[in-house]
Image 1: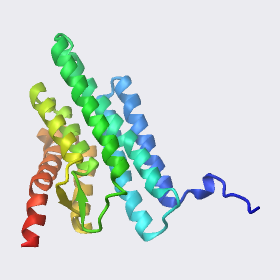
Image 2: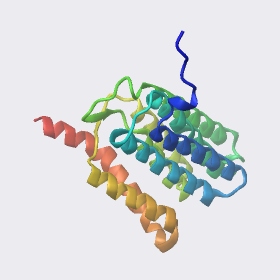
Image 3: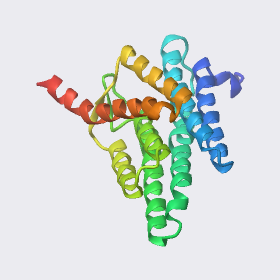
Amino acid sequence: MPLQKSMIKLLSVADGITLINAIFGFFAIVMVFLGEIRFAFSFILLALLADGLDGIVARKISKGDLGEYFEAMADMTSLGIAPAVFVYSIYHDMVSWCPFYHSYLVIALIVFLSLSIIRLASFHVMKDEKFFVGLPASASTIILLILAYFKVEFLYILLVIIIVSFAMVSNVRFPKLGYKIDAVATVLIILTLIMGKSYYGVAPMLLLIAIVVYALGGPVYLWKSKK
């Protein structure tokens, strides 16, 4: 009987970066518990960078046997659980005085987490070379992360949580961006990491605007390109 591969040997270089993505997500949750919101914000952004990098490495260098499953599990930590915990930590004190508001927040985040799981588990089954089916989890995370970081009104964040949650599992198609656009997004994420709320929060605001334009304009672009 041939010897089975060890679990560690199943991993590729890209899988190692995916693991870093999950670790950043874990650190983000730890920072929330420590009350270090700025660090939690930064670790989720770092996880997003790692999430983008592992795909590039997988395409250019190596793709392991575990890649598709590994990425979904790592993203569940950094793009599902960590953002949900982050948003809850921001708004808990604002709504704890009202049992109804607190319940709405918890229910909305349960919906977000549940649909994130469905989205990430379905991603590789429904993937296409030219477009994403449903709003990418990374886009949803950035929208929620920045709005919560700037503490927008509770009812607004509640509405956005529900919208992006169902957008993730919708049948709406969103275009896959080229390397140049991805590079611009990466630069905006790095600037947001460095600058935070400095200079009137211009870096995270530009990043948010870019993602919202993508979320609203992407499906329109695909629709018009078919005509």
